[in-house]
Image 1 (cartoon, rainbow, N blue to C red):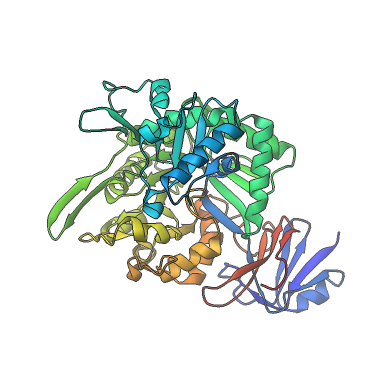
Image 2: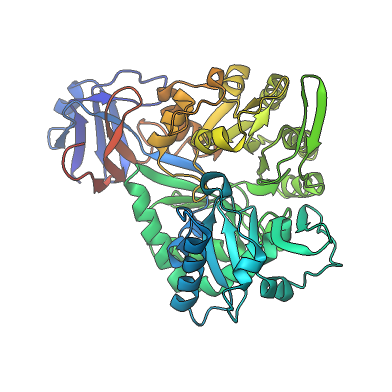
Length: 516
């Protein structure tokens, strides 16, 4: 079997035992040797790959990605760039015309922070469509539905807020059409259901996964994997049709819910193979649009947001059943709930390596970071969030807490895993790493610059760190003998790097066209 020998450039192994090698040898889908140039003599038949001064690193792992959802986004009109309400409504009408048989008209990308647009239920109704409309927020944590949508969901003036959600109301108590957190979960499920035919869904997943190759991504952790999505992934893996490796994190059929019901009787965390493996059960401590915050500003207390009060019971059930857990926690109050749930769940199986995952840790204090370190938690963070959090917070700062506290986490000893939260934020790891290193939004707006982490530390977070978060450190994330040959070739300096090539299981799947 022909081997391939990479040489002629810098090699970032992400492995402390192999700091400055000159050669990496790959055979089939394995890394077989890492060392000095004598390896070229030891493998005389190896096909040479001259890096020409570029950098070779492990393939990127996006440790919090919603591939199964993002794959369907091309089916819907994206209004993230709509500059006026008229443009937004035109997109809604175009979506209705393009999908005349769909039960719901689903449009995505609503982002009032970026566009300033705050459409109303009446404006959606003005289109006169005979089907409900759902305008999906870019966070996947809220939406706006038309009046017919409210009717289809059974939401009226007397409908109470669901636990963990909010039905926004006007001064007269009438629903405005804005559904927050779990109040929008059913609208998401119903409007997406017609698009989840397994065969078409698999085609969309494969197409989106091949796009990820352009960014050097060779594996993802699907961070809210419904039973239906898991089944599609399994069929794709069985047919050898997965372009990237997937760690499927079990989640309920409806988004943002805790508890996976009968799924606890299925494959446990770690079961599977290098193409498809079961990950941690996904849980929620608070909202994503209505994050749970309990802070002081110049000594004055400020408390708001939605907490998921059922977290502890479902986290304990998952751990008792033999799963690891990953908990969404955005606000510092959500982080507090998350820590409490971790400690409680650990008592259910005290001898296990829980490797608790906190997803986001969007606002936290140094003391909370130290608590996370003390229980061995891994922080699955999104450096790309710097771009929109810098604008969404309006420069607000709180006593003793930091937004996206990357440095506080790292200095406390919490392992960082890099991720994007795609499709809720741009997916490119190099783009996100630059945000995390500079703490600057794309337009130059700063966000807590003291929380920056060096660029190459982000490369580690997107490789070895992400592998560790997924319990995959023995199969990927480093350049070491015996590990999978998922590789990325990078060019650049500082924070201005680009992906030149991507290799999956020892095969080149992407090469950048033209000069980098």
